[in-house]
Length: 164
Ligand code: SF4
Image 1 (cartoon, helix red, strand yellow):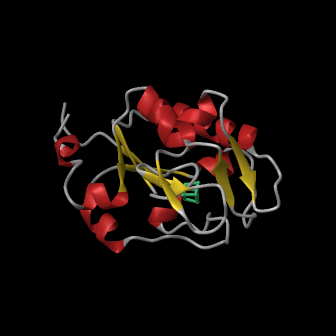
Image 2 (spheres, rainbow, N blue to C red):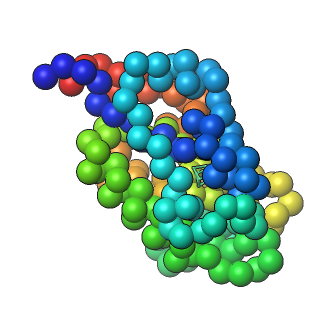
């Protein structure tokens, strides 16, 4: 069999204006690295039913793993709880990844859904804490290799670029 397996990518990194503030996070270096590779775009927060624009959200009480363990909640800047939207979005992203045969995911660092190594700490003070977002935590639990955009650009995901 020839050809690259598809990779699932945070839609905002591909330029889709799906961020909470109605903007994208287009990453030209990443697009360059992905040239010729089949890509599946996904925005977990939109898949979970949240509109755009929306109030910023952060994980309160832990990281995405703690959310799945029932020990942390996702709340927006007004204190409204959004945990179920984030869990739903993560589940739908996992289904999309599975159904499209993606072998890896590249997700936007620092997002409460897509963060790989860092997320905001729940205080809305622009403070970061280590840990994955809700979607990343689920994909990692399922055994899917997940990379931040910086990791992929620096070549950490190169072994997934081999032909299948
Ligand atoms: S949920 Fe992920 S894809 Fe959607 S805007 Fe946030 S970082 Fe981008």
